[in-house]
Image (tube, rainbow, N blue to C red; front, side):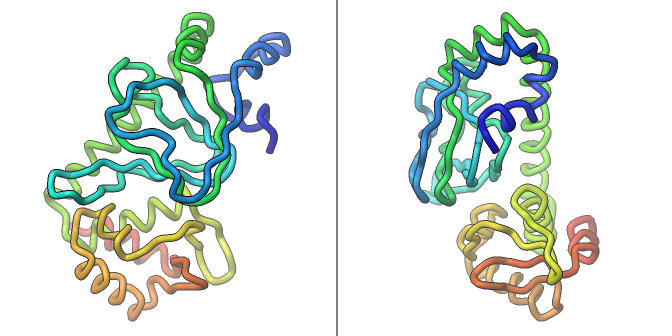
Amino acid sequence: MDRREILGALPVFAGLSDRDWDKVLDLFSERQYQRDDYIFLEGEAPEALYVVKSGKVKVLRHSTDGKDVVLRVVSVGQLLGSVGVFDGGGYPGTAQAIEDCTLLVIARNDCLTLVSRYPVFALTVINDMGNRLRSSAEQIRSLAVERVEQRIARTLLKLGQTAGADTPDGRVIEMPLTRQDVADMTGTTVETAIRVMSKFRREELIRTRRGKVVLVDIDLLQEIAESG
């Protein structure tokens, strides 16, 4: 997909005229990152807003005990860095490339100009940040009250939605996913993540294929994720 197709799929740019499109596209540049490269660090002054053109990026925070907690995975066509750009504080998390990726980049000042010029842009950004806030609240609740099996099932399903591809064998999570990643994303230990993932594999809820996780029985995973 080219730059206009990626941006055109975002509700923030709905209804732009051809003349407006030319102006908007000129504000964006492209940057390439290799796997494990950092896009920005937690606490850094927000200089730009990003849109993923290809590849995937994870957003994480560093906990007090030195572990990384993965907050979300950002895929093609999704915004990255919006909270820091629009509230003026530092980026609330660290963004790191999961795989080689290309990002569309717009400077913070240009982004704020778009907000004043196109009210629909501002409204959609507010909606995106509201969804992010709701997701964070759900994640906090999950860590506080849910069993680890629920948390891992919910995380696998979410990754299946944001980074998955349906195949005859099931939905493949199209990104590297180690047991450490699972532990970080669900607030548990690596040993517990290994135990639960092994249990899911024995029960044929998931399987691994060429190093990637395949969700075989999404309905049963959903039941586990929603069980009290």
